[in-house]
Image 1 (cartoon, one colour):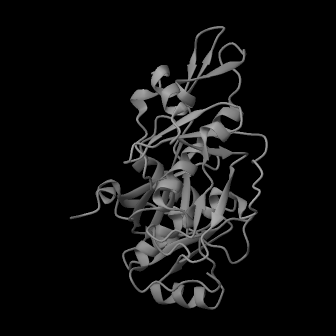
Image 2 (tube, rainbow, N blue to C red):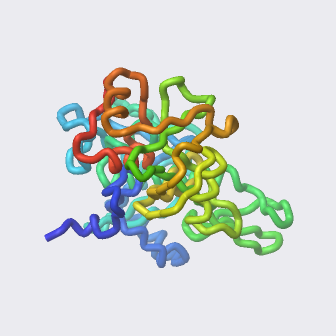
Length: 323
């Protein structure tokens, strides 16, 4: 029987930050007695987050992030009795009925055993189990939103946490504010020879190349955003668009929507000089050789950009040196 978690995946497979082992149970967020009872349960576990970081313990005997079933790190989760004071974000329950909360703090709690270390989602997201990756992604996204949306955009008064951390409500005018999520399209652009287009931003390392991406504008479809971004950044005309999968990217609040885009005018390619400083077409053999020689460094394994490149490349993908 297929893993039920795979039902919710796209063609890119189970992306690192799209994994979860927890049912969010959104219907309970407004049930204050139920949430209070969950917090008081001795089995409940709490994740403390501070500016996008949490305490993790390295599992030195595990196969370092080779699969979700062999995590190389785990989150430090506290009993609610041991959690610091502060706001409480209800994250959901796992299949055993254990409830999970996140609590934001100015600093992470100390650990007397000395095994734990602070880790950001970028650093440890690939190393965590499905459950822990989902918990940390959810918590980091909420923590950033709460820190950056303390005041009502209508009247300017301070807002208060509501709905177990998933709403901020203004006591002055009653406006409810919901977590911000910015949709962004990210594309594996190919031509009729099935070459892949990669680009480099000026702020990146000279050898860092990735696929094209950009934010969706108001009133714009996802397909329209794909075509517009490819034309703006590389001067090409998209003729086909295929959706492949999505991944949250809470750095700070994006949802990355992955596509394959086909163009018929590859010879017209040019970098816009603003978003991208360089664009290059690669066959699979050319990209493999460039990666092996260190001339091209692809996006990190945690990103959907890397998954798009590997999906295009296929089973013979060559792991970059040093990974």
